[in-house]
Length: 264
Image (cartoon, rainbow, N blue to C red; front, side, top):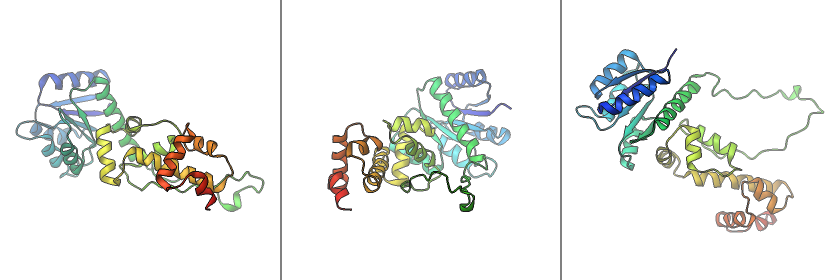
């Protein structure tokens, strides 16, 4: 069954363009010329996702989102704000109301569809009862005595935060590679400005800081549990330049990696 998308946009040309591209991609698309009509369509059709402009007469996007969240049947519908500006105040206001993301106008059709597709995938993953189920661990008695024993791994440093779990999962999988906020945001289904503010609000840290923290955890673990040379540890922690790794390690720990190892 085609996913239902509601576009609330007072500019007829923009609304029509979005509706046409959604229909072309086999979505069931509805359009509303203002917030009042949009709320009524949301209640009637219960769309899978809503794209809503912020600046509209009579009822702006914030009022639309607030109204929808007051009713149980529409409270869980993901909503992406569409705005000609995305200031820090805008992001803060939207996040406090529960907005799922921001698209800044003008945006390309590719960006528009990518935001919708990613958000629908996120919604489906969260609705899957197996999404958060931990992998079953073998019983101690079931482990073969001849099985290879994997080396221990450092404990996770990431806090539990439903909105950021996908972000931390991506960092965990890719911290040994060159990554930046755009790559993380794309993988997690957020715009970069929205993710930047979300991270600061929830953790007080930036993407760069979390990547460095994860790399340093790996570096400390290898320094303490192996006799690998510093260059090899740097590479294993995600640094192609051992000198840069040593400088960053010293900046965080007030000593070089080798001195830190010797003090253990």
